[in-house]
Image (tube, rainbow, N blue to C red; front, side, top):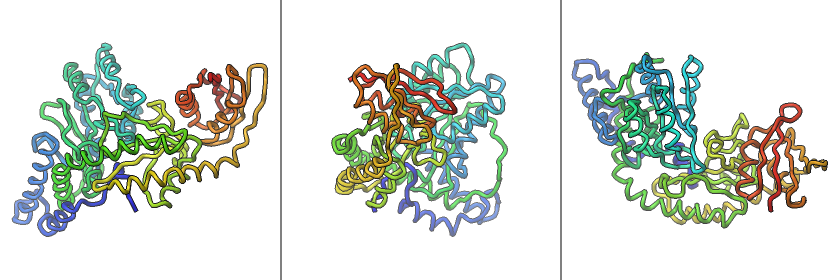
Length: 455
């Protein structure tokens, strides 16, 4: 079964497995002890740190291992904010950061700090002018957080340019490099960096945090202090070194396969939007959204067909809220599929996926179609579609059904209490060249979304 969810996690790299087994015999002791077993464990830990530091592009004494990538991010953010608390309590984050960063930002806000969320364009790339304005508005900042590449759509961020702006403003930049570090070092004069080993085929439960010398940093007390898992750390560092050696060849091989998916999906499946930057992106990742399809049902259909993928669709979330990344980008979230190819993926596997996808989407759409019966009311101001109580993707599906039946220039108002409708209806209008007039309150907890038929 092809596993196309590499951006979530990868199985142990063969080198990681070998290093883990070897380190189990020598890395069990406390590396802080002066006896022979402790010194042996310390040598393993120091060697792993040197290897990981070389890959990260930092000094060994600037890098520490953590219990996860999330822990690295939270420690980095908390430590940098604490170190600069006399300067400012203002945190700047891009609106498409990983949820771990956004949760840390919410915690900072709840504790009385200030958070500025920076906008991105429709490809998911940071608007650098927005960062420049935020840094130069006269209100000092304590820290800026920017991922090197987006976890959901693969768009790479202008880290070097952002780092230059931060340096000029005297503000440290923390980079979440979880997705990009296996492919190469992060460019630019950044201040802090975090990553997670399971993203490159290392063991779970190992993250790394880099804090450059000269950065004001007050690390928070550990929540659960304990012994370091030296065999896992050794395996993480060994696998990072191994994947880096393979990265250029894998990137050159996987990028054309992703290009093929990006080009063929809209040709094979009607009403599909490929999202993310087509050029400035990770070599192995592509995301697209299929209109009029339930996201969870689509993932199950592809799983039954033998393909493991993931999604940012609100239809796959227990909270029924759309992906914050897709929301910030202003693109479709319904029927969203993220394909992230692992090393070794073949052209034949990609071709089989492309051959399977149309039938999977058609089957999901066919299951939904009989249940979609728009409740329509015609009035002096146009047509109203009552989609209250109906969940993604029904509000957009009913809009599409009704708008084709009214004259050009007619206003169609969709009533919906589904949070995803606020994202998907404007995005649908953009892709179908219809005029989105905005939204306003409706009776109860719903919203009224107004669309004028333009063509």
